[in-house]
Length: 453
Image (cartoon, rainbow, N blue to C red; front, side, top):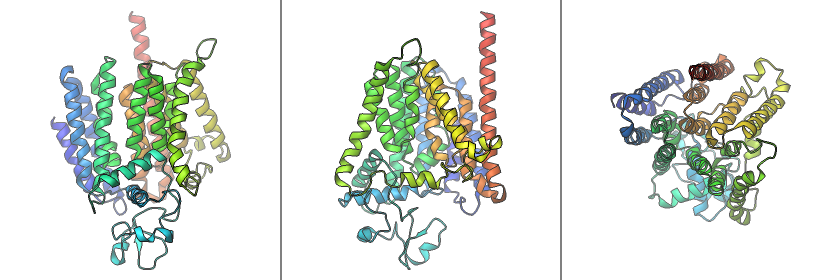
């Protein structure tokens, strides 16, 4: 409890430390303190009696989650776009039809999301055309990127929020979703007779209150659906699992990578188990399609919004952009990086489909997602929230190194602008070494156990 209380206290100090733009080095030290305390608290949980672990994990998860409420978002402006999309929908306008800077939406602008004068001096403010005004929204001249379940969530939060509530409702929503995810993890692990203490890998992880609560990233909604879906698949309620995974995909796209895990082992044996595959894929695809349908019917523009432009902006089609494919580029020419990444991910997916354990779909999902991180080296730390939840289900804690690497890429790299790419690539290289070492230790322990038997 002492370590958990210390973790909560340091998380509060980290959240209120507004150093992302001006003091990323100092903020990095706060992040490091949080991760060290998290590791110590999770390790000490082993000494807690099994019958008390679930209560401690849940109580600690609530304590850790609420630390994210201590300040407005400090390292990301995505939440402001969520609030805007909710407001636009409440006005009866499709969020896919207009960019925030479009004059058709001028009547919806207020001084919170579109401040004036001296309030425009902040580094997180964007200009969009009006000479005396700016906006807290990033990319104000492009259409929204978020899928329909996320948009429905934004509308729901807006509808339930008091007037002028600003950022707090979305943060409270993030905290509620984070705690709900902890509950689902505990439930899945308990039903399988496994150590419920593993849920602490999610519940107490610093990435959850920082990215899921303080920055209110909608990824936590997608994580909740994905975890619940994999839990349903594991007990052979595949149609339910498919629908839930589909809801996750329709919230943030990224949960699509858990589908190979949900289909683990379908290619084992002489004949593929197409029936089992269809039992997951058809409901998942059906839910995604149906969730888009209402927006297709009311929208005049593409419901895919800025998705294609975002992929191009982030350099997924250009290996030399934004430190993308950093590890591959250490050994391959830039032009080979993208094809190599696609081939390697396909091989990992094929391995999971042939050799994966259908009773543990999260293991295959973690393998695919982890490899995707190593091959594509993304720079946004909140992308790893799904991976953290998969680690909690699977138990291979060494994969949490990827989430820590994401924080280094997103914060620490800015403290060393002259070595920006080196820092990002090195962070993933260290994470890969930790995962490889963990694999080696587990493999050796298994070999020793077999010899002993």
